[in-house]
Image 1 (cartoon, rainbow, N blue to C red):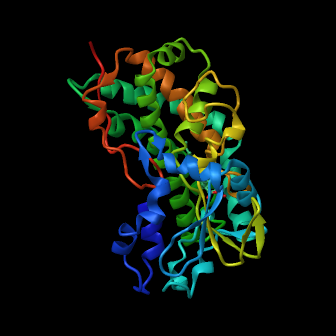
Image 2: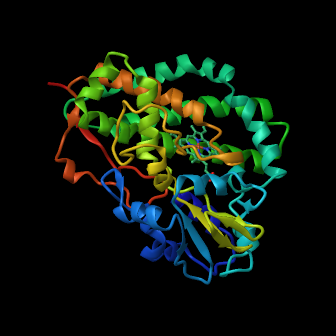
Length: 362
Ligand code: HEM
């Protein structure tokens, strides 16, 4: 998602910032995206305890804040009247030109956001989604068959995690285009399709891969999922614990506002750490631990407020179908190599693995 954001953001003709600059962003900006294995670095928890709204050292003269507390993140994401998602707030600052605006649902404010979101919402009603359910089961079964036919290690990322959401989204997009192809302009339709594809692909794929890793590390949980017990709470706890979308899109204060006792000035940028918020002690005890027996910690893995993930229920459907089918079909599934050799994506907005080699048979 970071690369997509960077591509969209920097593809304009201004040329005052180039892609290399983003990859060289200093650690003072990137550190909230760092993890040790599946866990955010300790500094994120420390920051949340001591200063849930803290200054971020951003170059290029942009004044920015990092928000890590659960209540404080909700306070920002819930105030679309005081925080804008529109990148044009950066126009004219730090060499950002108007054509750098990435566009699309996640970067639009009302009323444009309201209109675009209304076009999408009907595709995501439970009634529409339930029609997709059998197709998702088929897609999952198809991938399991393909994996079973492989001799030796299988890359679960390439063969399972990526194809399931890709194929599911293709089904959905064909719906979208048939019904709205004539209502909106080609560019807007392409923007919506791009948003759905990028919003729904890497996110769900990362959840599928990292969730499979958690299942391999927790055999007792895998046993109960295999038996069909507690799949829904397992998926919710996994969404909270993994929080693969580590930060929300940047918000820009449209007026002076106080969040968590800290004064944020109009024009300041605000980065909400969802992975920080989802481990806040106010949600319960031991929130750094994965605990599938935990009951309903209200997580922010899908965001909050008007930009809350439009695909949340679809993602849940994919996850609830895929994990039980995976552990039932391959009860002996295990990592093909040393866990220490796994390559996690460093400083990526969507956390994940580059590959997940597993052995399936005896
Ligand atoms: C487990 C999988 C997923 C996770 C963790 C996730 C997470 C998120 C989060 C945190 C946001 C809010 C970002 C913000 O406020 O800045 C968001 C928005 C969005 N998501 Fe997802 N998402 C997932 C799956 C999907 C799927 C399957 C789709 C569509 C097929 C999708 C489409 C979108 C779109 C279009 C938005 C923008 C909504 C708006 O701005 O109104 N996501 N997602």
